[in-house]
Image 1: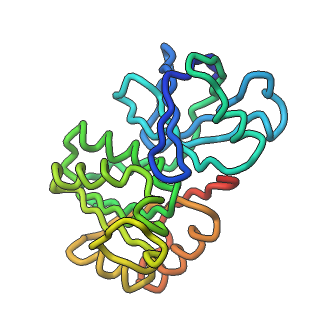
Image 2 (image 1 turned 60 degrees about the vertical axis):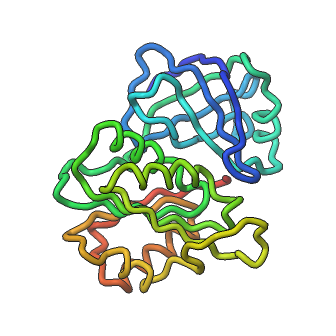
Length: 238
């Protein structure tokens, strides 16, 4: 890994309580879709309050680096949210092994909870740009539509690319102010079985908080999925 100094170009809300941060892409920074970097804030290079790992939302072909996070009330998140446009910060990376397999004949089933969507955004944007002849199925769980980061972009990607199937579900529509005509409830073994209909020998990717990753691994096991075909990444402190 290497450390680069970059500028903050833009920041924007991508869901209720979730912000995306756009950074300039330094010369020589190369990564694979699904990888991450550490963000090191000015004056906070040491200790957990000064640096945090984030999956890269942008795809390798894009001209900027983007990450997104829930804006929780922590010292790091407060300092991150207060950064003015044009501010300098450091990134250290890339790293991570949650990378889409190369055998296009095997579908990929991506399972995300909440902000765990971030590495999959890079994968899906990259696959769309490359026009990969591979079936990718995204199972995406959130409490409400307003909490669902990148929902409109994912719906648009699914409309444009027949190889991408979006199966989003909401678990708390009773407290939503937005309409939703899709699935509701949690991703369980029955939900997984529906997603697997017509798929031959898929490989599974799970991303989200530790409790969700564990629950999804159990649901996949109950659905008859071989654990050797499951890859996962746990997000701490998001």
